Amino acid sequence: MNVDFIFDFASPNAYLCHKAIQNLEKTHDIKFNYIPCLLGGIMKLSNNQPPMVTLAEIPNKSKYEFDTAFNRFMKEHNITKFKMNEHFPVNTISLIRGAIVAQKNNFFDSYVEIVLSGLWEQSLKLDSPEALHELLTKNDCHADQVIEGIAQDEIKAELIANTSEAVKKGAFGIPTFFVEDEMFYGKDTLRELKEMSS
Picture 1 (cartoon, rainbow, N blue to C red):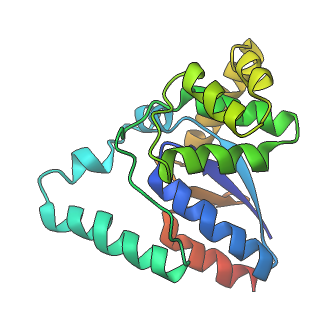
Picture 2: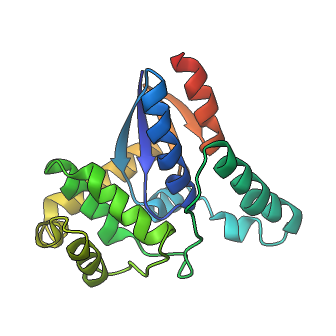
């Protein structure tokens, strides 16, 4: 079964899903296709607001979403290195354009690991091309090629197209998954996808 994963580094839930997906792909007949999109663009185009805003006046729900549900998911999937980024929310436009460059040049897997680790394990401030270049250099991952690529019009245009297409299909946040045209939203829907693939 093929699943499209509407993905941006900006979401801590995208990090959690990525970690869970690595095990899912090993144990089930399921393949996730990452589609780099800009979460801020999805929110704007779908007239959505981030949970920090929508849950600000509902402390019980906020505590459940960010403590209980988070911890339960991490325990279920044996995720041990997650750390909330102290610079959150982070502007990820350079990072997600870089993901498209990495996809086109066949080093997407290593790129995603490095950037997700930087954001959600090391709590780095990765909101500029300079910070991204430093991280990639440190990890020996095509730093110059990525920085050159993210400035190209075709990469910028592809990110805009991916983001618009995701919203057109129904996306309003991340993580969102599509099996053909059927949409699944939120990290907990990985359970449904797992059942469908069995």
